[in-house]
Image 1 (spheres, rainbow, N blue to C red):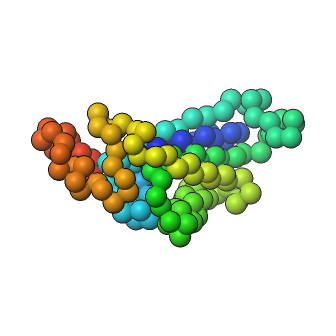
Image 2 (cartoon, rainbow, N blue to C red):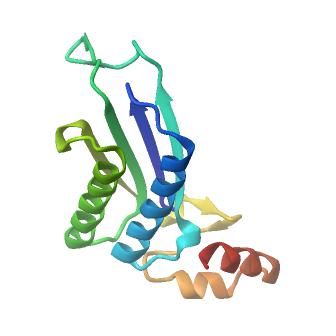
Length: 146
């Protein structure tokens, strides 16, 4: 947690751009929330031409949507920093205008999620959660976080 789904419509993102965005989205989440980088996942999807509609009409403009599933408990200030940072990184990397970028955050209760085989802690409880993980998993996560 978090998981960010980046959906592009009428724009193909090259591998290099995806890699850059994945790093930037991870860093934005880390800086805005203080959560370890190993929690952040970024998944890219592309909507095929002719499968995107608004108001019942086909959309031909390039659009990017980010759906971020994050643990509940974040303040409005943190969420605003997060969504604005996400918008700006998409804008810089793709040259799209603000009206072509959509960012949504969805709060999920930590006790309703399992990651790395364990129920997630409340925001702020990551150190205690990490302490109780198996040593092999701790090593794996430390490699991701650095």
